[in-house]
Length: 563
Image (cartoon, rainbow, N blue to C red; front, side):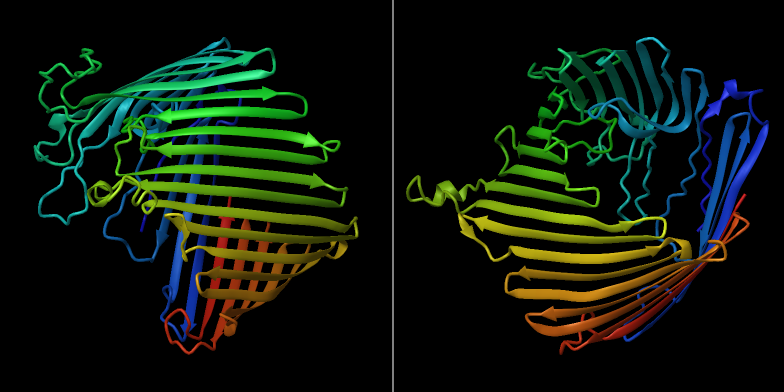
């Protein structure tokens, strides 16, 4: 597959006469991968090769990067050519966008959507700044009825927007207007009563940040979106539509609706601690055509505290939040989530430090069924049978101890212990679908600086319990790294042995060897060679694909040249 993307960016007109007139740089790389397997079906092709290159031409600050890739791997049924062109010239405080580009005004308005058109960011030295854009947000997709299904038709969508900002010290105010509309005539073959309809959207956003008394910081983000989901829908003759016609900005009809989204935050900072509160609410069905995806129909409340104790050796951060959906109380099922987290770092000495974290995630699902009322003998029957709770807890503790650190020798011991548990409840009864997961690893590393050599040794163990199934894995790992010929050649070798158990009985043993080499010639040429060998010896009676004995060997040879 060949890809030839072209993108022009960061053209600085004021650099003319101040830099080299022409600079050319780039590189080319190739990788060949050979694969062999015995005992199982090949998990990849026996041979693959990849070639890629890039060329960057810089003329008085005008940068034109070119690139290509080629591979003998099989192609999919549908491919995107990725031919997108963009020009982003800059002059002092003006930055332009021509061609394919993306801009972000806020999370609820224009948020990183790719467009083909023009844009500008005007950022003079004063407090005022302006960003503008105009272009095509979506290309029309005309689908022939004889083609394979799966490709969704689309209208051509055009849009424009402006963001005006005022900022002084820690205070900031943004006004955003974004407009997007589908062109009905861009896809004449579109079915009239199809699932894809021409939309029209107008979004107005307000963002502000205000500092109070040097210790309090308030921030607020608000957006109102008027969305017409079908421009061909009938006019609203009942007068129930609360969205008026706004001329060229928006023509409302019976499919037009009004949605809001807002987010509030407060932070109070002292020398040794910070306290923060947050609130976010996005209305059901909220949508902006300036974002690819926007979550909606939820309310979120958060709180956080950070502090430093014990002469700033101990740092603590606590976060908690509650989120729920179904703001209109109209869904068949609703969900409520609780998240709590604690992170701690303790610097016991210059050589020893600890890190720990704890998190608790709980989700509550309530399913409203019509049968609750139809089949109930009394108002108290079946109150909890359709309530579902999922609880997940994570604990992680790690430590690092430096035995020695000098010009001659470095020695470090690291340990890590993690635990996760999950539990499900329905109607107040604990289900058998939960589990516990333990993981422990420890390692020792020794570096002999004058000899350019280092050694590592470690051990890993994990144990999982899900229902009646108990599995565990245990094994050591060793490794060595060495530099030769004034560090031009770097070689590393590692080996590991892991033994797996299922319900107390040995299930399999896996041996893994890995050898890598990298050689640099005159700083521009780089040769890489890696070999990986894996052997799995299974003692399980089952001959399923996941329990068979097999061997694999993979070799990769690569070359890179940069100029």
